[in-house]
Length: 317
Image (cartoon, rainbow, N blue to C red; front, side):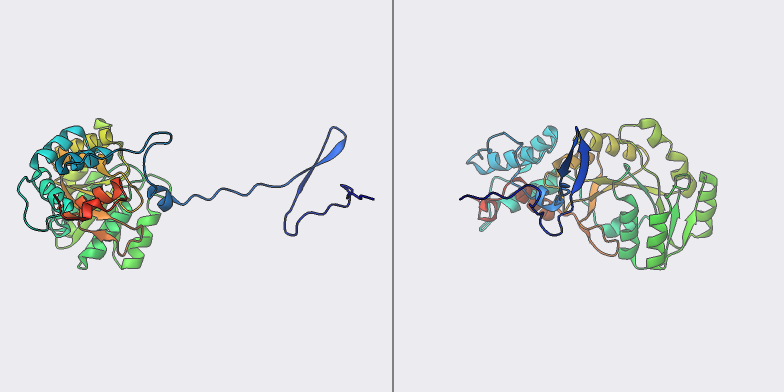
């Protein structure tokens, strides 16, 4: 005789809490759902076409292939054409596609060293909210290694000083607060022989009025603006921010989140505004992770991010 278990005698698995609710005259049992876990690095490293779209077919010619890679990386079209025109035609022995792209990037885009940025002695860090400006400021001071001082102008926002105060304590660097351009000028005048890194609040890339509002601070400290942009910024926003920062006297742009974003071409919009690529942040840890952004590094990053096949590592045809 077949015996079936009664619902009343059925047991739940151990360590599986249930939620009991009464509805329509009877007890209803619902087990809680586990929260989803998102791995950002895994997401960024996926083979990247848009959902539902077919895989791209890469051209066979080297120049056409590199041009397609630039477009796949969301590099602005005008810059794509400029880089493609600079790809060398004659090849030396054992020249790879990465070598050819790096040579073209060196012609089409300006690059600078982190050491060149620090030579300014008074740096005003500017960029969008959440770009990693404060962490990048700490990395600059850690890389400098000499006498330095933090100054924060983000004193009106709740919690605006907390991250920079933690970095200053860990690095043993003084931190000053400047609530006005006049206060900033007084601090800068009193510390002429130190590297001054001035941290500012977030600035909307497309808000020209907000960018112009930074001018009194730049003039008061006689500072050089340094634009900091995240690698996943829209190309229009990168171009707007680059133009606005350049109008304030900025000469360099630094890139953050380069380690977790696959398509990094859009941030090169700032390079179209005439700013030199000066460095990249590849980890949120403030004591290290500041890397030079050279034509060779950028070429490999563009190629490896656009496709996973190894064709670009082999000697060019």
